Length: 257
Image (tube, rainbow, N blue to C red; front, side, top):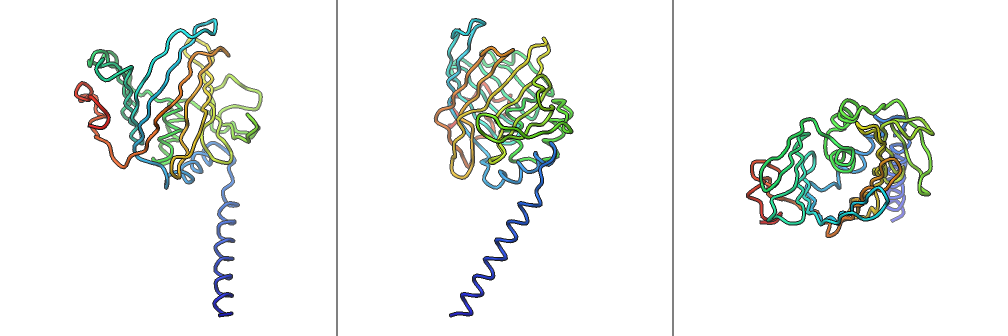
């Protein structure tokens, strides 16, 4: 009995030391090591498919509500999203498909944009499931984020990593990641018209073993522009892949047919 107890204690000590060594070995010192750490923390628990409803609120230049809409969204990680405005019957919405963006009006493609990536989809979702080198390439070469600019700070009473800017710089394209949970909490970018976008990711909650954001808030030149609040968030083992095929957009009447 004594030998068994000693052996159990010995094995637990080895496991504990191994975990401590792994944690110490992961030194996050720049954008690349951070993106790899994000993948390593999340990929085992990240769902392939997510659906949610979205309460969308737009604001005018005076800070007053200008429009409210309800959207429906489905995600297939990595790289695929399906958005529906108001309802499925309208045939209005948009879709991401591996960097290609399609806008639909009355079930017809109204506009296409190639090589369209945004930090939300890349870091809140794709980074959890795809090879981190792909994520790094997109952020470096498509979003033009300087991975050598890196620092740590405190924001909203949480410790965060910042990639893409030096401390005090709120104009360069950059993203902020919670140090403990390694999820995206903020990104800042320069629009083509010269205005500065500032997106905050909010209301993270655990769904099973994974953290999923509950919404985002967008500012342009420090003025509130948009709020999104997610409801009925659900993870799935499978969804119909036609949901993410632009040619099938007009045939989709529900995410769960």
